Image: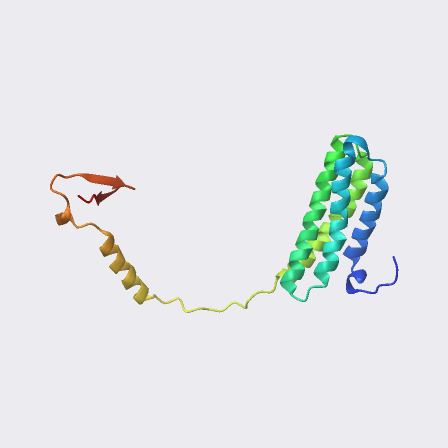
Length: 172
């Protein structure tokens, strides 16, 4: 890789993901026919990782950075699943897949730590006074009384509907 110009160029995870893209393109040259669609999806997912790392590293908001690193992490899992599908359909050798998965595991580990580091931005915890809120308790009690039907207002014929086990008076 060339001399770093942007901040993301200095990140080990970015350089490793570029190496994975190169390896995936090299392996994909042999995929054709029935494996064509899996190959295309695999290569798109492979490119998605360094693209999201670069975009996330350029965000000023730490929450945004964490979100893009999570997206890149998800793309790595997608690539692993596509590799499994290619191995199962004899499109990719098991040995080659295991080597590529080792790279993916390292990428996922690095992205997980980075996302957790940047997602740790939260409002500092504050000890709130946990006293009773009597004003709201009183309001709730008033509403409960209003909801109950008065027995003296029941129709003389005794017709009632039952909803959720409660007796509700039907209007005449």
